Amino acid sequence: MKFSEKSENGNNKLPKTDDCHPHIESRINARDRQADPDDPDAIAESSARKYIQHLRWFQFWLDEYELTPDNVTSGDAVQLSRDLTDAYNGQTPVSRWREIHRFYRARRRIDPEYPDPLERHDTQYLTKHPRLAVSAA
Picture 1 (tube, helix red, strand yellow):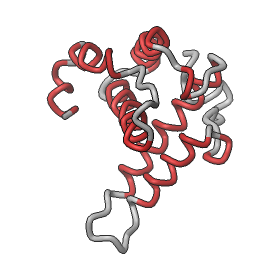
Picture 2: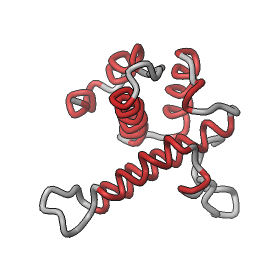
Picture 3: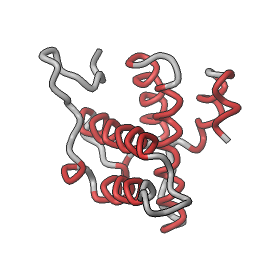
């Protein structure tokens, strides 16, 4: 599988946080802070780790196509959908898609002009997985 997280010898192929695009790195750091054990409203550490892994996978995917989060197009979003579906089964493709889409929505809250190439395809992608689409809200 081209987008598997592990190489043939079992090593992790995902980039480290500080090797990610600054916007992705910022989102990873925000997710990490959301798991603060001293915060009663914190998310579970295991959830934060999964969200972070989804974002690191997105950076891996971007690197493979020589893209940045800033220049992903609607057509690239379709390719992302295909690659997620080809590389994973179960809930993983939908969970990754949702976290990547959350990344773009968070960027748009900071800069309303920031493009969200997944927005147009979000409902369509989730409908391919009707059992999971209900939990996407």
